[in-house]
Amino acid sequence: MLILMQPAATPDQVAEVLALLDSAGIRAHVHEAPDSLSIVAPHASQALKADRIEPMAGVRRVVSLTSPYKLASADAAAGRTVVDVRGTRIGGPDLALVGGPCGVESREQLFTVARYVAEAGVKLLRAGAFKPRTSPYAFQGLGVEGLRLLEEARREFDLGIVTEATEVETFDDVERSADMVQIGARNMQNFALLRRAGRSEKPVLLKRGPAATLEEWLYAAEYVLSEGNRQVVLCERGIRTWSDHARNTLDISVVPAAKALTHLPVMVDPSHATGRRDLVIPCALAGVAVGADGLLVETHCHPEKALSDGPQALLPSDFIRLVAQAGAVHRALQGPSLTGLWM
Picture 1 (cartoon, rainbow, N blue to C red):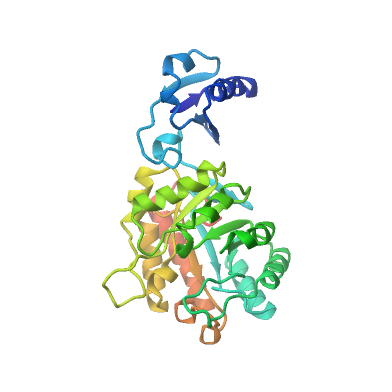
Picture 2 (cartoon, rainbow, N blue to C red; picture 1 turned 180 degrees about the vertical axis):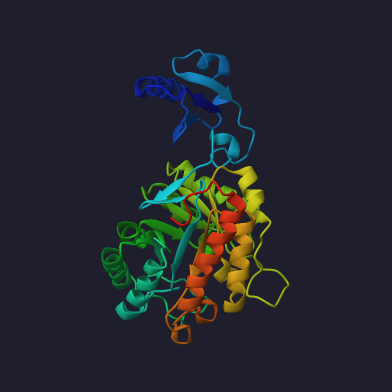
């Protein structure tokens, strides 16, 4: 059940609706957007009829939720969700860009990349302190030391930090340092980790698993949302297919398909999708063209020396070019009235 409140509904009126739901044993979530206020109450129709709620003060209308993913469904919100990450708004009219290396390798490496990312006008820095790798012998990240370096970079360059949590045991450390917590593709169905992310106050970037359907991806988001965290951004990063010209296959079609089914923002990661530097910019622009709310792109000052994913990391000059080209594509799609570009 979706309870649409009047825009001018008071906190007391919202509290009265929540109290009624609670008395019926229904757990509800308040969803606030710039122009709307609603209460999502999964399965409430089993205990309460709409005509019991609609006459209440401050209630505009009650809508039945038929989607299997009650909180992620487009029907669960009066408008599209906009997630704010340290001043960068993901969703809405602006295009968000997140750039940085695959992993934190050293202070010199991180600061060099952070400097040109900031100079390009990008406000969010991505880099992993904990790295889940296919081989147990590959570089696993600097761990807590890497988180401290990310905190330094935030202070030095005024950048928001996006970094990955790989396990429940170290989630607290990541949560303290990050402005946005990433759940990687390998952990898309790590339900304990998803629930922990759902109890966090930090925004969550949820990557699609390498063999996940759109429905499975949205169910994973539902795990986070059902714990109370409404700040979820979906990220398409390529799926495993029979094609061998790239590491994965970027599923461009899933972006508009997901945006039709959910109110959550959708980003694209062309770096992990392709695994090839020469394919990153074309696929990034394709993601913008089909309506992605932002891009997550890897870049490195010396890709040939990178300890992880060097072949897919953009050179500094290529990263700066991508910023300009993606902005141009976004402007062309939005029309001449758009004033904001990157945030």
